[in-house]
Image (cartoon, rainbow, N blue to C red; front, side):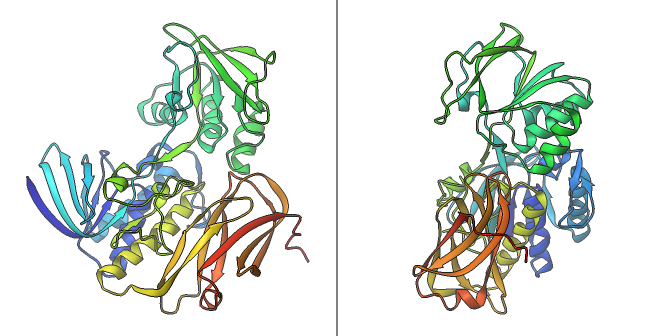
Length: 428
């Protein structure tokens, strides 16, 4: 066993891990090790060659590889240690990491702090249980993206896409631009799972039909996919008899949700949130295990990488503060509860005292599309803060700044955040 040590280990070299490592370095921690299982840094950004990245964080429009390269260059410039092609096998509650690569063999890495930044993976056909044969041509949208953008292969010529998440929407446009016929994007729910910008730019601009309240009920074909049967669904999302129809196609791309990769988190004893699939964290993105932090899509699935970067910098800065013994806990933690029409909240609790902090940003998603809403924080049955929005959609994350001066004056140790329709707008 090859034994090593470091002050801060960052597991995952995607946008979350890179931003966390960069921030920790800037806060004075130089002994950092990034562990990445792929052959290069950048994570999923390397296959996202479309533009639209960086509008919030860099105030300019970049492709995925361009966005990633800015952080990769900084990591190299700072001399932060990186292990590529290295698979982490286990993380213990005492912050020991067991990993393996072909050059060094088995590794035991003892870290004083850890940032979990493993990202997420796509749900597959097996996860949603579509009946029928098992021919070639049924793959996830992200796999198709890698085939086209990195490997140089087009997975099919006549395509149906199931699921209207952002990856599915982007791949509808990508397949169309590569010459494939995109027959339809099907969505089980009565609303899309992606952000509005992608619905407009990826479907509407290319006249690709979006069919809501529909799903694939059967797959046809022996060696290669030949067709799919589609049916409308009722309010309980069950297929409606006699609404079935067939679409001939050779490729079915699945964009049916993302799952945070938290197997290592569980091994380490990190408590997970059933709503997000990611760790329960405080405002500094620290988990229930002191010195283990989480950020990015392993914490909760983001719609924009810019937000991943912002969040990961919080985790990186806090990890540095932990290593420098600068984190101070409140006497009593504040628990944040997802109330009416709120799918989840991150962070789930506020536990730390931070000098000169102005606010804690709360991130959440609505459970359904709503117009003219009011987002409220309730303490002791009293509304202490509200924000009006023209609309909310589940596919688009909402942020709500919670001022420190309100946090320090809370009457209870449990506050609820709710979204109510008909609350008015910010206009006027």
